[in-house]
Length: 96
Image 1: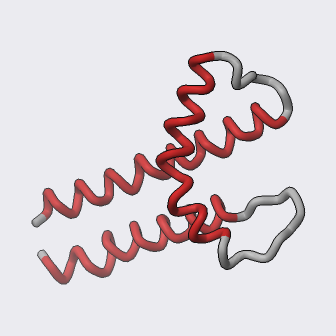
Image 2: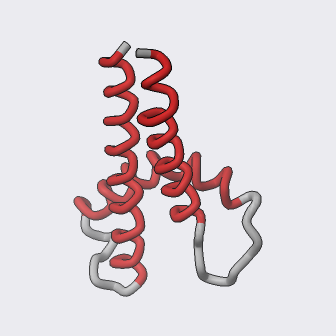
């Protein structure tokens, strides 16, 4: 059971890095630091977008329109932090 809990926590930690990469890459694309015409950048953007967009889309449905500001990654990160702490400190001690 410990191995499964550690695997879930590791996957959540890796997903946090993917969200950070998506946010930073979106800023770099917006400010024309990197260009989507570059095949590597486009491939990286496509992969990160496919990993994060399904969850972010669900969050964006409930958020009000704030113009050009997207708060959905922050809310997703808060949910992941909450879930990770819940598993680590509440669920795992009761199961083990």
